[in-house]
Amino acid sequence: MSGSGVRGVEPSDRALERLREVVQWPDLAGTRYELVGEVARGGMGVVYRARDRELERDVALKVIALEAADGSTAERLRREARTIARLEHPGIVPVHDVGTLPDGRVFYAMKLVSGRRLDELLRSGLPLRERLRLLLRIAEPVAFAHAHGVIHRDLKPENVMVGPFGEVLVMDWGVAKDRDQPAAPGGSTPAEVPGATAHGTIVGTPAYMSPEQARGDVEHVDARSDVYALGAILYFMLVGRAPGPASASPDAVTRTWVGPRTGSPRLQPPREIDPELPRPLEAIGLKALAAEPAARYPGVAELSADVARFLEGEPVLAYPEGLAERALRLATRYRTPILLVLAYVVMRVALLLVARV
Amino acid sequence: MAFPNTRRSLVLAVQSEDAQERARALEAVAVAYWRPVFRHLRFRFGARDEEAEDLAQGFFAAALEKGWLARYEPARGRFRSYLLACLQAYVANERRAGRRLKRGGGAATVPIDGVDADGEPSELPLAAATDLEAEFQREWVLGLLALAVRKLRERCAGTSRELALVLFERYDLEDCEPSERPRYQDLAREFDVPVTQVTNHLHWARQRLREILLETLRETTASEEEFRSEARALFGSEPS
Image (cartoon, each protein chain N blue to C red):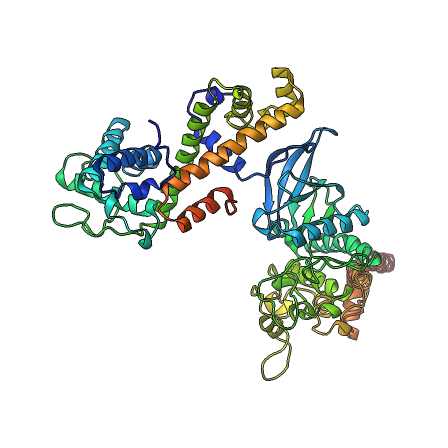
């Protein structure tokens, strides 16, 4: 250690930079935690790395941002913590504790996740099959949450962490719709996207948002809205960008699917961007991204099953294949035994010819 | 140098009719802005330490003598931006006069608008280049923090709060890697106090530091709006 912390000595630039962070930190006096540093900052709260003195481990503390601190935000954070606590699944980050800081702000402590964000990982380049296996792992905790009456409503690559061993954690349940928990006071939903209109409250991230969410049609948001978002993640995995607009305007989101005059879908099919992509995979993505919830997979399990079928070389439900495509798929799927049989036949014929000579 | 007891804006006090008050206020402004001005001269214009020091002193002396800061109009923008524009004009003037910072001597050139034929800042621009502003802002914030630490030390010296200051310096001011930073329990052992006392002392010291920062911000801004905006930038939230 250098001596810049010695009394009377002018603090170094590095010490002052740290002090600049410290003056923004929440006061954890009276809690079992020591703040180590800031990890991430969102609309509702800030996530810090902190030391749990009692259990001698590092945790992540989510604290309401000072500017967002009011009664309803506090209740939203408590709701989020309770929702996550109810969802005990290896793919959902566990909550350890909920508390109140001396300044009245609510916080909760959760497992400190190490790994990379899915969007960063995907940009680093992964083989297609590996990307699809990741999608299946993301779908597992989402399906689990649905079985417990919780709709995530903000699934996107930025909200998925992938650990060093490929383990997947679905993060940020702050805007989840929980069947078993009353809506937060001051609004029917836990977080709002600027651009809310008379349609209702818009919740989620526009680029990955289903049309019903974009309209603020809270009543019709259900598991199929998360199916849509998983379809949007699949789209990102296939072409490297989100299917929807960056703007939160409901009109902008709606225009993603329906052209102003023809009524035809305007969502750019993945194969238009990359013609090398398999047609069945494109069909799976487009079915999950259907504008009408009824036209999508009825649940996450059905979407996962179709992706798994594709990975196994089986026909997928979203894509009715022709005879030639079926033959090609079977040839690809059974390439090894077919090659062995062919080699055997060639060898026998060669032996016969040799014997005749 | 002691700050005036009043929490009145020093920026407005430099416009006082009373020459003594004006000089005192300018001296206090010079203390608060010394670091960004010095660093700007040192690194942006490539001046050596002694040159930068001379120039900084010369700049504040000229500001007092020629009444530049008295011409500041809060409605036109932040005081910091105005001060930066004055500084740039001053450096251009010095260059033109060939006194210091010879052109091309490793110094970065900055276009200066609003400098008249005598090199005086006739109509000073309030908006400087964004990166210059950002750099000046960073140095201003670090200078403000350093100043607040000095004041905290002064306030704690010889009082029962000396331990709070020592703990604060060990935990929050130590220049070390995050992995080397002591834990509360390490400090508790080192100073033979319960961990809760470490927490309480750190809480007290950080609170005082925030208060001092707010006081200093109040003194070095010209309007309530500017004060709140600066506080928001520094603390990430509105001051309570």
